[in-house]
Amino acid sequence: MSRAAIVLAALRRGDWLTPDRARAYCWMTAAVTTIQATHLVALTLWAVAADPHGRAPVSDFDAFWSAAVLAVQGHPASAYDPAVLSAAEAVGAQAVDGQFLPYMNPPVFLLLCLPLGLLPYLTAMGAFIAATYGGLAVCLRRMLPPAWPLLPAAAFPAMMVNGCEGQNGAISAMAFAGGLLCMERRPVVAGLCLGVLSFKPHLALGVPIALCAARRWRVLAGLAGSVLLLAGSSLALLGPATWARFFGAAPVMRHVLEHGDSWPKMQSPFAAVRVLHGGLPLAYAVQAVAALLALTALARLARRRAGAGAETAAMVAASLLCTPYLFEYDLACLAIPMAWLAARGSLGGWRPWEKSLLAILYFYPIEARNMSLHVGLPATPFLIAALLAVILARSRSDLARGARAPALSSDCLNLSCSVSTLAASG
Image 1 (spheres, rainbow, N blue to C red):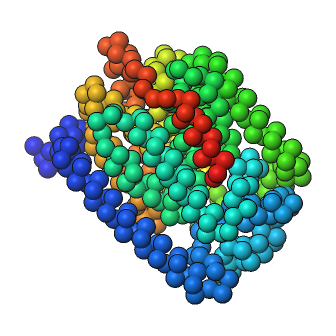
Image 2 (cartoon, helix red, strand yellow; image 1 turned 90 degrees about the horizontal axis):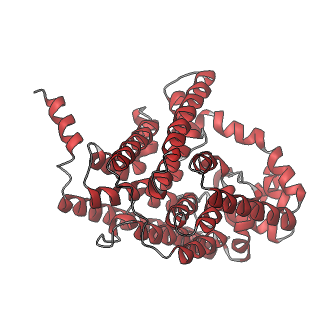
Image 3 (cartoon, rainbow, N blue to C red; image 1 turned 120 degrees about the vertical axis):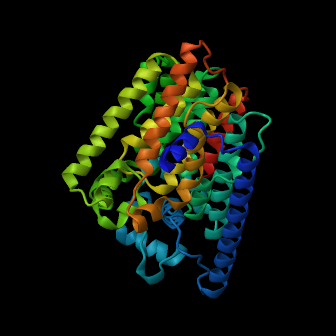
């Protein structure tokens, strides 16, 4: 047997990933994460002390906070005006070497960010990262078997990437987690949690399709109510001009998608084609085919009512394959299908490829950008597609044995309240 065949056989079985090794890898990751976080905090404090304006190093959070400040000052529509937002970042947040970070989220997210505009920059940033990081860790703890330690969830590299960039990927992951944990026992509450994804709707393309295919009408009703409530509140508080400016900023969003500087940071099929020097029409075509295949597979699984866990896990993986606008910090959402798959493997036995794929996906986000930028190998879409494939295989196996995954034992109502509170603070 060739060496390649031996390696593939080992990856298929996953015997190499013993509990002791997994524990050691998590501890090493936690140590590296702690060192990086300490370095980031020290760098921030040094920069604040050295800068006469008390500003921290550049972070994506700058745009969130500056937009929130403008909204609190009575100018929410100005968040979508590059000149005004750039001036706000220069005064209050950061503008080193003329850097400008556009605000491109819908007004729903601006509504959720309003409390941050009442706080000083560093206080707001610390509260935002702590609330979203901690909230997602709590969600993952509820999804994993009781005997599992918190360490694998707390050390997940994608969460560290999201926190270091000051981004909102953890909020998206919490919304998916709330939907999963509440779907069986509190379907309307599950829909309310999933509705929080309206702040980033391109990550939720698979949600309504899965809910309709599974005939989860109460969840769908909660989703619709949540979206209407958030959109209506943002319209009432921020004004129609803010929504008009948001839709008017579509060319900027398209430029970010199609401009070459952003491709290594993106993790979508579209970006993979562009990194590999494929043309723009080919990139859009590949993205469309990937979305069609992912949504078809998701609908077929949901139609069989494989259970809230399987449906939500597939929903997340399929949704990440559907959008061309997927950045590395959005990979925090992978924590949801990975936690479900880990729980099912621990309780019901591991299927081929599952353990090895989980190990790769666990560590991959921290090097996702480097794989595209320096290696020229954008592997993220292939890994997400593989994750969707093993979720489908696991679900088919469970249904064939009549061993549909049991509902997770969690206090769904309390969790949904936590998701709503953390989203409001972030």
